[in-house]
Length: 368
Image 1 (cartoon, rainbow, N blue to C red):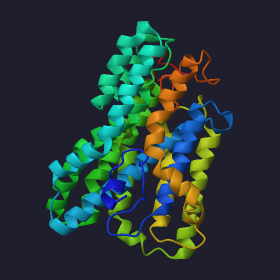
Image 2 (cartoon, rainbow, N blue to C red; image 1 turned 135 degrees about the horizontal axis):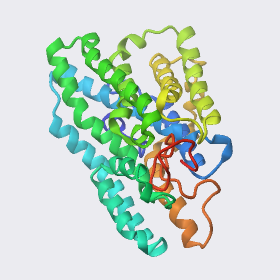
Image 3 (cartoon, one colour; image 1 turned 120 degrees about the horizontal axis):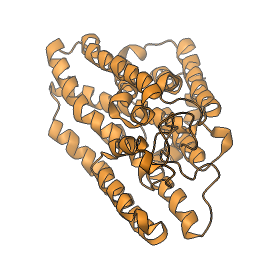
Image 4 (cartoon, rainbow, N blue to C red; image 1 turned 180 degrees about the horizontal axis):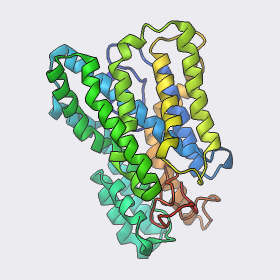
């Protein structure tokens, strides 16, 4: 995969290596994608040992912010401008064919094997997913008491793509504006993004307690996670000069943070709130240390061929896994995996019941 393709995946990339523009391929990023999507799939499949596997989506958010901002910065450095039209056109060409196919097949499977009484609801989810707005639909339904105890939608995992596309409607324009105002000085260009990240994080913490569905699904409460990766990209040049004695431990510490969150979080963890700091910080540390590759860093593990291969398939795996988990058991006349029925949020625990089929007050009954 080219550097442009790698940098433009909003969730797990569909193939190839992750290559921040102008640099050698980051195989550790591909391996980290494999870890993230593996955690998500295992969590959705009801594997109790990784009850916090939903944090894989947070890992993807940080990776996305890092790679796409690296792409934008390269364009700014070489041309002094960002072609917003080309940026969105490339994203559409990369993302829409596969996502449109998944939506169409999933809607057909829902019509054949799921409740006919909910077909109109699934069709609404499909339309919202195609328009990258399903996250707001899920947040609104998560506070609707009339929607309690409903089965999960086979398309609800598209919420994470919606969050990212909404972020990227704003971020390239903000980066271009600040780049021109600051005349290309990255430290100053990072200031407005830092303010946005602080505000987004604060909103997420506050809403996790007062309105968990909105805290979980809204783009304005998740923007700081993508912004964390973007901020890292702005200082990547300095990070490349990290000594190996520091870079290697940073990557292992980061991978440990991600692992700890996946193993220790569960449906009772108010999320995102301040708990999202652990997987986000862990991902940042892995990416930061990987900017200065060290022989004994976590890249030694993450760069292994099976993980790199799996990371290349992660975009498609992410898109297909949830519809299969929801529809196939019904098609075979079997029950879904334990602890999965009734979940409205397939990509993470939505503190206090964040989806259609759950109330908006904690503790969560059965969330992703």
